[in-house]
Length: 203
Image 1 (cartoon, helix red, strand yellow):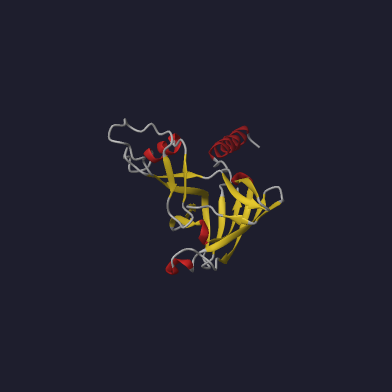
Image 2: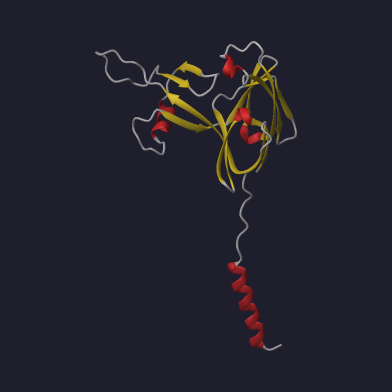
């Protein structure tokens, strides 16, 4: 074999070796099934909380609110939650919305964990350790809600499978205004958690 042929082969190997595409890290995917029978495959799934900031009512002689002791309401469902406390970080998130308005009162943030009840104890389950969730629900027969919405008032439980193979059986779970957000071939998909029957996460 001539020296020229050998050098040509080595040059081709060098060129193709440097231009071969790198293998991307496996992206996160969620396989979702809803109570309505729909199935979704969502890329880059996240659980996000939507909330409304309620500014305090200041007395006419009072100065501008400091943020301490402000009430924040999680608005958007029958299980709306209200509490008092400092909301500096959440206020900053509200200011960072796409509208760019400094007067924004709507906000959202990504959940890092799920809060569940098990035999009277509250358990925080990091979402990074969750492999799959299967929800169960039963109607609340003595619902205090008006008749036109009481039919959609359920009590939820869940079986949460973890990446280490263990499970957490939740006697009660309520994620408030949380949605499961991801991207499908048709575009962005937002699914309220109450519509999710089962979700399997692959990372």
